[in-house]
Structures are given as structure tokens and as C-alpha cells.
Amino acid sequence: MNFLRFSDLCAQGQARGRRVFIRADLNVPQDDQGRITEDTRIRACLPCIRMALDAGAAVMVSSHLGRPTEGHLTAADSLAPVAQRLGQLLERPVRLQAHWLEGVEVEAGDLVLLENCRAHPGEKKNDETLSRRMAALCDIYVNDAFGTAHRAEATTHGMARFAPIACAGPLLAAEIDALSRALSQPRRPLVAIVGGSKVSTKLSLLHNLADKVDRLIVGGGIANTFMKAAGLPIGKSLAEPDLVDQARSVMAAMKARGAEVPIPSDVVVVKALAADAPASLKPASEVADDDLILDIGPHTTARLADLLKTAGTIVWNGPVGVFEYPAFSQGTAGIARAIAGSNAFSIAGGGDTLAAIAQFGIEKEVGYISTGGGAFLEVLEGKLLPAFDILQKRAAG
Ligand code: ADP
Ligand code: MG
Image 1: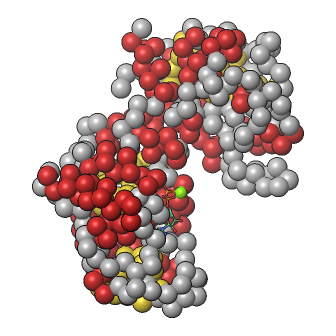
Image 2: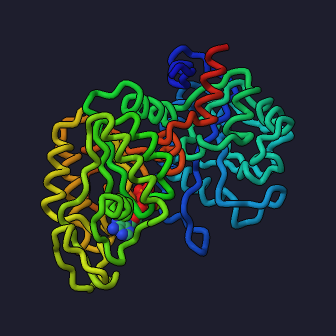
Image 3: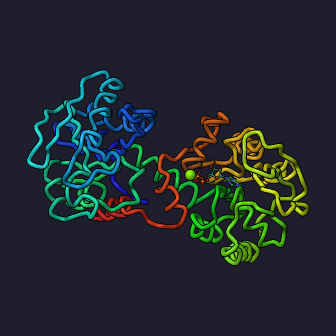
């Protein structure tokens, strides 16, 4: 994928004295008092901000936060807590400017945070007039917001159309690079693991991956629907009977390519979902009518771990069991260990997948951990993200 990189512009001295607008994703979770409960996204944007400051640019940064009503910025939607945290992390005060469409005063070497971009009428609709006004504020537009790269909005797409120069920040570039490495020219065999709760939320992803990967591993509630499609009993387990045909067509697509979708051979079941419910291990063929399948068993885990051992590239989205409860976390822990121990280039993404990676402490062993939930899934679905698309078009001239 060909696009302009902010790091290259900085290295060439092109950002010196220039007005740089960084669209970041600083949409952090907050508690009832507005306190930031988790600041990964703010930390993820620091390299871009530091790069711009070090390059001698006049730096403007904006992001959305929450879901403000366009035209009505309330205190709850304000980036004020973000400005404060950013200031702590950068060890310098960060000024927050509320109204910024009329103009922004910022010196070279200085930084200003521009209030919640989604408060502007027209932001979500990617309004052209708004996009042009925003683009006129800068010499260089930098998109570093992978978390919103799947949305075409004024600050994620429109500004990139109209700014004098439009480029990708280091975080966005790293995401594009890792995803291309995994999906465009993967080292084979390419193995995908798709777990989680529902087939319906990941159907187009399963179909797209079935056309690309050498092995497709399904897990979690998704595997239940595949088990049903394979004629196995699944009792009361979470599954989508309407999608059994879709599961069969994914299995057929893989079979046509000479690969099976591995179906669990042993499972962990309970009679009711609760932390203290007595769990039992069963062969997959012996699941009772009143059983709930909540994890894969050790035989299945070992077989899947073997497949991962020989992989050249691994793409992981979705836990293979209800890993939030210790009794049903062994399958996902085993998969996590197998990925950590594999020589493959691995990429993982998804909100719950990231929680599992943190729970099992394999952050350092995963090749790349994507910061975007929805955006990551859309890339796996085979979609070209609007934010990538426009940067590519700009680079093509
Ligand atoms: P991600 O956020 O990584 O994309 P999902 O949101 O699709 O993942 O799915 C994660 C959820 O799936 C977890 O909360 C997990 O408890 C649930 N899950 C996994 N296996 C099962 C299962 N067998 N039955 C019900 N829920 C499951
Ligand atoms: Mg999730």
C-alpha cells in the first residue's frame, strides 16, 4: 500500500515551522466522574505528537470522545481530562481550545489540543464545507487514528482530501504495515483463529478469510454453530441455528482448498453459566441436551496448538471460550501460549482478544497487537478502510 508517511516528512525536514494537524483517537473510557479509567489510546498517540514537536512543527491535535450531539458540546464530552493526562505524559501543559474552526494560534514547537471534533455539525457526515474549513487550518494533515479509520468523517477522510499534504502518522502506518504483512504477502501457511460469541457478527470476516487462509480455526460460540453444522449435539450452547448453512458454506470453501475447519473433539460444559458452576469435560459427541459448551477441551487445544506451531503467519480475533471465568479459560490460555511460542508473525485484534492477551501476559510475544476493534475487523473482512483509501489516492497524486 503506497501512502505518505509523516515520519518520512519529518526526517526530510518538511515539518519544520509547518502547521501540523494530527487526527488522533483519544476516545478513552471514563468513569461516572469523567476520570480516565484506561489511557492506552493516549499513550499510543505519543510517538506521533513527539515526532511532530521534535520536527519543529506547530502542532494541533484533535479527537472525538464519546458520542456528543453535533452542535452541542457538553462538559461530559469535553477533552479536558485528556488534555490533562496528555500533559502529564508529555511533561508539559497542554492547552485545550474549545472553538477552533475560526482559526488556531499555535507557534512552532508548541502544542494545542482542539476540542472534541465530533461536536461540529457535519463531522459524521464528512461534510465537504466543514472538511475544507478544517483542512485550511494546516499545512500537513496527519491521520494517526486507526480506531476510526473505518469511518469516513470530516477529520478522518474529508480533511485528507483537502489538506495541502495528507499522510499517515506512525501508529496508522504501523497498523497498515502489520495488516499488509499478515494478509497481502503472508508467510505461509497463514492460519486464522476466529472466536468470540456470535457467527452473525463475524460472518463476512469468516467468508473472506476462508478465501485467503490455509487454515481457519473457529472457537467459542462461533465453533458451536460449526459443531451443529457438522452434525454434533450442542445442547443449550450459544449458537445461531439460522447460520448453520453459512457455516457449512465456509467449511465447503475451506475444503475446496484442501483444508478442513477443525471441529472441537472435546469440550468443557456446565448446566448453567456461573463462576462456581461445576464444569465437566466431555467428548464433543456426548454433549447433553441441557449442557452449555463454554470452552474447548485439552485434546482440541493440543490439536489447535499443533496447527499454530507450523504456521508462518497467524491472525487472531476472538477468544475460544468464556475466558473471563477461570474454569473456562484453559482453551484460550492454550491458544495464547501456542501463539506466544510460535515463530510465526502474529497479529491480533478485538476488544475481548486484547483483554485475553493481557490476562495471559503474552503482549510481548504477539507480533502486532492492533489498536482498532471495528477497523481491524473490517480489514479482515476484506474492506479497504476510507482513511487508508484517501491517503493512497493522495499519494497517487
Ligand atoms: P472480540 O471482542 O475479541 O472480537 P467477541 O466480542 O466476538 O471477541 O467475543 C468475546 C466473547 O465471547 C467473550 O465475552 C467470551 O466470553 C464469549 N465466548 C467465548 N466462547 C463462548 C462460548 N462457548 N459461549 C458463549 N460465549 C462465549
Ligand atoms: Mg468483543
